[in-house]
Length: 391
Image 1 (tube, rainbow, N blue to C red):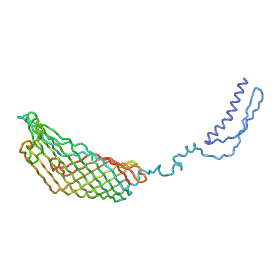
Image 2 (image 1 turned 45 degrees about the vertical axis):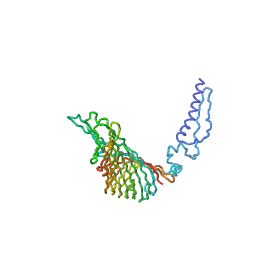
Image 3 (image 1 turned 60 degrees about the vertical axis):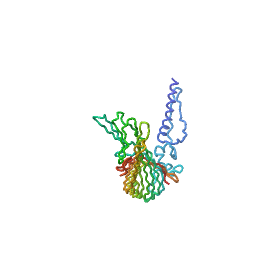
Image 4 (image 1 turned 90 degrees about the horizontal axis):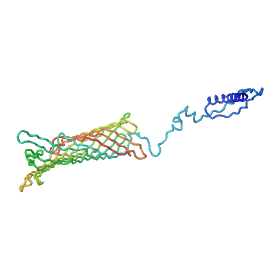
């Protein structure tokens, strides 16, 4: 019984001391100032009873309040403190990605275009199948082009408003050669497109017909550019001179069953000219370092159209027949181009700033013809990817 009474008295005394300390710690977060308290006076009335007398509260002198790290993070964001709000250069030589797009600078770059030629028609030969009595079926077989890599190089100087730019582009593609044989029943034929009175068609089974083509084109531009910045938009126009040339060829051969050449057509034609070119472009940022851009260009060129034909018939005989022809005339050629894509601009270093772009691209060359004719237009469609730098 004495033990239980003594334990109760001790617990009561500890609670009396701890309760004021807990309230003080809860009211003030910060370094705890140690204070000395006199030990409470305990008067023993009898051996069987202990009475605890709590010490009267004493007034403490006001302490200088210091702001702790814990308190600062709860009342003021660390990121908003003056230490973190001070502006300064980025590590190394880097600056912000979004520099003034209208400032004066040199620029140069390389662009890889991947384009596929398109024609309203581009025949290689006509295959006729027949049973000799009741039906004939004609099939026009055309050349099939794939996406082809074509390089483009550009160099220029852009001031705050006025600039100059030079651009060179070259396309060269030779699709695979087409090979065919007349039907084995002897009632069919293979006939190339018409070239005057030249005839190297074949109806003989086991004979062979081959046809191939090629297309080359290039442009050289020298432009004067003018741009302005309106809010977030960069808008510009350009004009200058363009020289362009496009050439196509057609080569067809007929061989007999033993592989001897019996007929051949070698035909080439092309356009070349120089004239004014002009266009417009616009771009607007979509993220910190990426912008959406579009560009359109039109050219009107004055030059010359040429063609040359060399054909041979009955080449397996002792007296073959040869046909040659060449033409030249003045011609007007129109070219239209359009691009739509995204351009990335990297962080500027001390002397240069990288940039790159990807875009869809389309071109239309009027009156450029096809492999076997000077009539019709040629179109190019695909995409491009560029990389360059500003100084």
